[in-house]
Image (cartoon, rainbow, N blue to C red; front, side, top):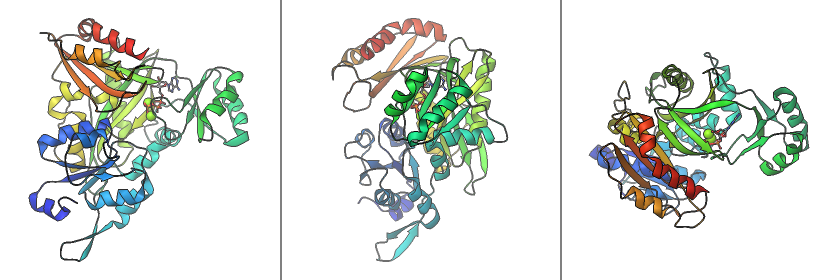
Length: 422
Ligand code: ATP
Ligand code: MG
Ligand code: MG
């Protein structure tokens, strides 16, 4: 083991223990390194985040393993997550009862690292059906797509028939837990899809969701702060961004959104703050939303952590990227009152693994070779093995004029990203 918690107290150098070490954890480490903040990662040995931060405190293992989570807690001043699919019973136990650590003099003390966001938030968000029931029942009656729980086993078919009667076709059948990149979603177009949908999603607990006939998808990142007694202090929103999903995976993010009225973007920020104020703990959160034809908004889901739609903040809001914000919020350091980008426009393009392991190399070469007076290019590769459809990196482009102008100049990048995916 590296330094002890006592050593760090003496050095004034806080340690954040992070459950999960993928690309979000990696970019969190990249923000933490120049700040002199130590991040202890619980994940596999060569996880992307571990490659980006050297410390004696990393723990090798699963972020779903209670024993490993306790080991991480013993080495950390604070605990946080880069993924919501973690084991929350042990987080609840750590908050209530702490973990025992042995001091150099042989005595044992109980150590209780604060956990942000709260395990309550993580547990609620893990179940997409329950999180939205919670939002709809809140005082501000947050708008969500109508939803119905689906019975497990043979009764599932009757639930789908009931959903079809209530919602009409198409509707969405979704796994309540564990899904990402649309992997737990099945679009049900007619009765003929009932059996294949149930077969595809297998034994997972499911729910049905009314189809949202959206014209755009937006996302808003929010920094939530509260005091150590759990009283909400503030919710500060980044600008609304447009997210483009293809085959249910986010492929592109536009800031500001294209062809969305300013008022709708401001409504989205206010709604996002309402949503996040109903949760518990400090940190950054993403609120995904649908914009309907009439400009009204429907909340799709929340992520209790940095998010794909906030990558652009690394270059566009450099004084407080979503990763720096996560660190500042967890440690309760001062957060700006407003989060204004330093550039008028930005586009983020996800690099998804192509058919061959080197399909993305042409794109990386392009990103390494373009210089312009009106567009800057930032390549981020995550140190992950390429597999078809896997998020292995992203490119952020920042522009000095409008999003329309930037989109024109970004065309070669957009074309290449689309080619690799197909
Ligand atoms: P992630 O966590 O990676 O964002 P996920 O697996 O939790 O994704 P969702 O966010 O539920 O999946 O859905 C993925 C995409 O599918 C949405 O961004 C949207 O494009 C589409 N979608 C989801 N629900 C609906 C709906 N009710 N009506 C229409 N489209 C939907
Ligand atoms: Mg999700
Ligand atoms: Mg989503």
